[in-house]
Each structure stands twice: as structure tokens, then as C-alpha cells.
Length: 357
Figure 1 (cartoon, rainbow, N blue to C red):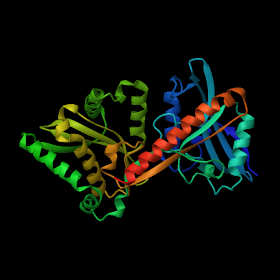
Figure 2 (tube, one colour; figure 1 turned 30 degrees about the horizontal axis):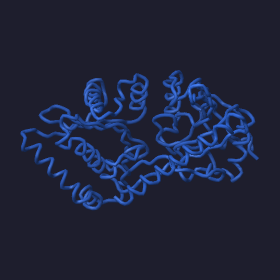
Figure 3 (cartoon, rainbow, N blue to C red; figure 1 turned 180 degrees about the horizontal axis):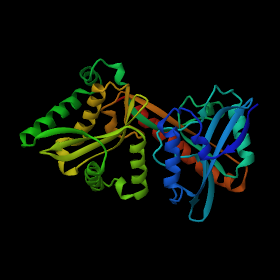
Figure 4 (spheres, rainbow, N blue to C red; figure 1 turned 180 degrees about the vertical axis):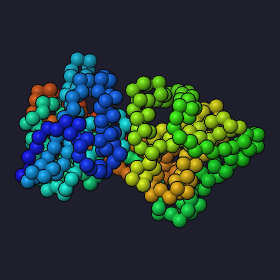
């Protein structure tokens, strides 16, 4: 049998461990909570409280589960309390139980029983889980997200990769737009830079043009920008700019972790849409990953159609749920189960589309 107890975030800092995802690392978790603890809305949740659960087997630390309790309001008047992985509410690159040893099959049942006895909540939702999670022993996993990627080490060179993965039409689009750039008199240049005040000013300027297409402008949200900047400080990070006549018209930011390059944010100036500035920027990120001999380049969470043009594989992520026998939980259960199954179906369909590109 396992036994459990609460520890603090500061206790977690003192534990030497290596999580499966960058968003499992202590600095990521700590920064997420410090930035978003007081941000209250129906996505991030209200009245957040950290619960970090440590599991022991024969007095040896076996696992840690960083949780946050919060509530969301439904139909303007009904408050539902959730227990979730800390950080899954925004920006997660994957979540799971932090394992320090192989866990026995009984672990999930014992963990959830203890959590239900010691924390008050209505619903437990775990999101961005890998299929290999120990929680799959207890729960059915539903599709939730995907992260398209390229296994760089699988190919001898960028040329071999692009010939195999890029469709002929996409290769023609890259060549055609490059010819148009030169024909219209632009000097085309790629610039790989550190993320600092100067490059951030260009990133913000270009990102704001997303609003033309009705997309969110990340950098107008102070807390989200603050978290991104902390992320760029924690991990080796860089930005690539596509420049026309020395003016940046597209960018892509990324971090490096465990031999992997992970795309974080990208945008192109909508005034230069017809020149394919955005696709040339992402293609440059891939080429650079080959030249630096990265094992893998991931384009992060999201099944945006444009990502499928560049990639041949997708990391799949899942969700699972549980609830306590409570009047609110039972009344809300049909609604949440409907949303869960709808999300599962939508993501599964997108994955099928990507595989048959």
C-alpha cells in the first residue's frame, strides 16, 4: 500500500526529479501559479488553491501530484469546484503524475481514494495526459489535444525530410512565394536572435496583426506575456525572424528541452500574407533544427491545419474525469459528459484528417 501526504510547492523545489514534459518541471509549475493564482475568469478558474500530494512506498518517495483546486461558474449562478493538474488551464505542454519509481497497478485507485477523502471538490479533471499515464489503469482516456512534430533524427538531412514529408504542392508554394518575394524587390533574410527587449518589440508588433483574422493577441494580456517571458528565461530560447529589406515580417519563438525544440509562438504580418512569410518562417525553424542536430521539433499543442503541412507525426494527449457523489456533481454530470464526448470526437476527427493529409 501507498501512503500520502500534502507537501508545499517549496518542498517540491527541493526534490531532484525529471518530469516527462517541460510543464512538469518545478520552475514551470511554480511560475504558472505565481503568475495566474490571482487571475480570475472562467477558463483559469476562481479562488485557486494549490494541493501538492506526495506518495510514499515503504517510506520512499514514489510520486508527486501537483494539483490546484478552483471553481468555475455555469449559467451565471452555479459554482462548480474542480480539482486539476496545476497549469493545465493554460499553456500546458503535457501533464502527468511525477514518478520516482515504477508504480504498482493499485496506485491510481489508492491515490484517488485518498484525494477524495482529503480534498473537497465536485469534479476531478486531468488534461494533457500521455496515453502511457498510470491513470489509464483506472480511467478511460478521451482525446483532448495533439502536438504535431518532426523526428529530426529520423532523417539524414532537411532535404531528405522535405522531399518525403512536404507535398509537391507545398514545395511548389514555398518556391513560388520565394520567387515572388525576389520579383517584387524584397531582400529576403533570416535572422536568429535572443529574446530580449529589442526582439520583443518586433514580436509584439507582428503578433498584433493576428487581430485582423480575429485571433487573440497574446501580448495584450499582461499575465500571459509575463508567463511567456518567464518561460523564455527558464529554458534556452530563441526567435527566428523573416525579414524583408531588414524589416521583420514574421517570427517564431521556441524553447529547447531535453534535446527537443518546441515551438511556442509564431505570427506573420498580415500585410505580407501573399508572400508566405509565415510558412517560410516555420520552414526556417525546421531547417535550423536540422543544422543544430536536434532530436525532435514539436509545434506545441494545437491541431491547426497549417501545422500538418510541415509534420509527419503527432503526439496525442488525453483527458479523464471523476466526480464525488454530491447533488451539484450529479446534476452537472450529463452536461459535462456531453462536452467531454463532443471534445473527444472533434479531436479524434482532426487527428484522422492529419494522418490522411
